[in-house]
Image 1 (spheres, rainbow over the protein chains, first blue to last red):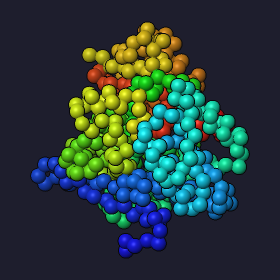
Image 2: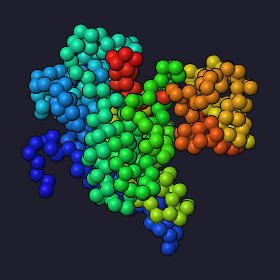
Image 3: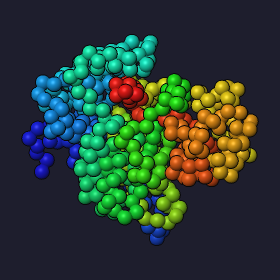
Image 4: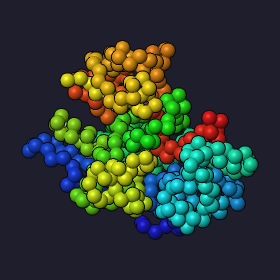
Length: 321
Length: 104
């Protein structure tokens, strides 16, 4: 059945597609090693974040934290902001996003199109200024609701209740699950579900390693680990640099016809690493990984064309995942 | 051949501004001792007084997080590439603002 009462009901249930050309070849007689992509760009706003946004809003409604006409405050310009803007519109909430004024034009246009209000903090002040602005706004509006995706258990529960069961239904022979590590919701929820159901399944994180500029501002004593993160759910964690992420993102579209964002390229890079290890070890493997979003929102980076070094330069200093 | 170690900007005051330094060791712990002998003070920024890896420091051996490879006991060998990074989450702006709002 592919008919739904509303767009909100159409979230999840995404296709799992095989990657016959990118899967490594195995020697004659050796057990197969196969890669499978879960196409999360097929969600209503085009990213995996629709699942978490929907669950977080529903949970807040059920707990009485959100009532019709309330305002949600979200200090991000990323996919979660876009998902929340859609859910807020359909469920009757006002969404206010706080972001620095130097974010890409596409983001601002998409958010406005969905009816979100945007409060800009001066670009010159960087994240410190954005934090100060968000703090000030929150103090002025104590009734506004923040869903706090980094610590909201409903974020992980969305994946425990939907992404995990979908994967097991479509790929009962799954041996590895690979996803991106941001809020950690996808890996925590899906990982816990699969570990309960599949003996020996391996849960693998692919984490973006940005250009130096991004880390240059970070003080080691003021780092951050999302509250949702539980290292015991993971078996391995890979750090994937910009160049490898871009290379794999291009391979996805060139070899398998999947036009994805750069975080998906980083995830494929880790998936290929475990797939090749399985070939070496002569083990059967069904490696499922996440296509987190499509490439549309990143076209203006210019990183889909030109040399890899050009692309790396284009993404330097950007949070590409 | 040695082990190549990539140092984040914030710690380059210990390496005379060098982005990449070389070290030796059989385990990560040994490698960090070797680095500290050449770049005094570095160890104190990576390891807590209790002897564990600092919570907000991530170290990768050939792109894999050492916390899943035995942490300070992780094996290293010549030709390996080790990367040290501060812990940041995806959507760094979002977390910074949220952490600040929630009393961070």
